[in-house]
Length: 107
Image (cartoon, rainbow, N blue to C red; front, side):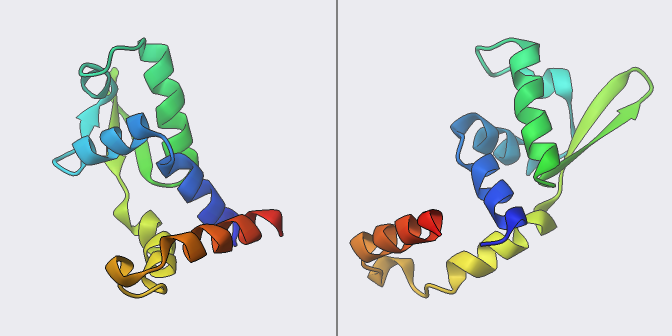
């Protein structure tokens, strides 16, 4: 697997980060607005945002005194193509898929 793909999946592995991406589907958001629904500190949210930014899944931009987050859906293209290469997920043998992933991680 490519390093970019590894970084994308690592970023998507956390439920808080997936929730943040879902929120950003609607529109750009200020960091403080992103943090509001979560029961964690702004510093903890900022760490999640750094991971998402490093993966290219979001960009952060300072507008005046406010830092804004924007979803970058194109960054998920490689992961989507990789997942789609398995065909219909409903028909997939998940045990074989798990064995495949374990083998990929061992390589």
